[in-house]
Length: 153
Image (tube, rainbow, N blue to C red; front, side, top):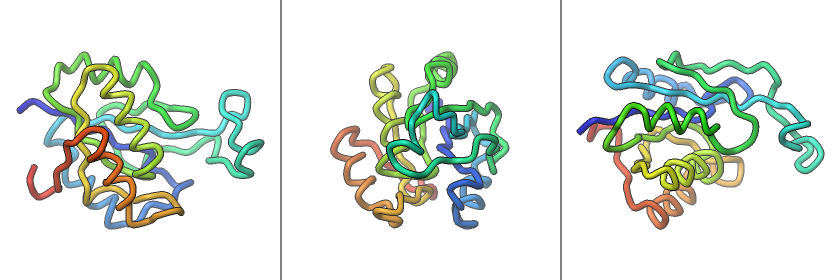
């Protein structure tokens, strides 16, 4: 199966646990990889105005993926989705931070683009609402059906 890895927002602003970084690093170099980095620009996404918080304006990915795309807000950019489509993959493996928000938003964008989003359930961390990510995994299974564990790859 031809697949790619989409790493969502593993960056200093979100203080990812070391086990997540280490687990994702194991996959780097084994398949094409893309990482997103969420940066703050209030003129594009009103995090401060609406939520009273925002990511850093200059964060960098803590994972050295093949390609890194900057985004503002929850959803991957159209350029990110087009790049993944250009790889002609059977599925896109998704991991990273904010299982029930940014990862789920990526799943919807991938699905709407005709790609098969597949969540790596043991390489994701939920938001402050549910750090376990269980809520996000349940939402993912409901909307997209496809999940795997890293040991299955």
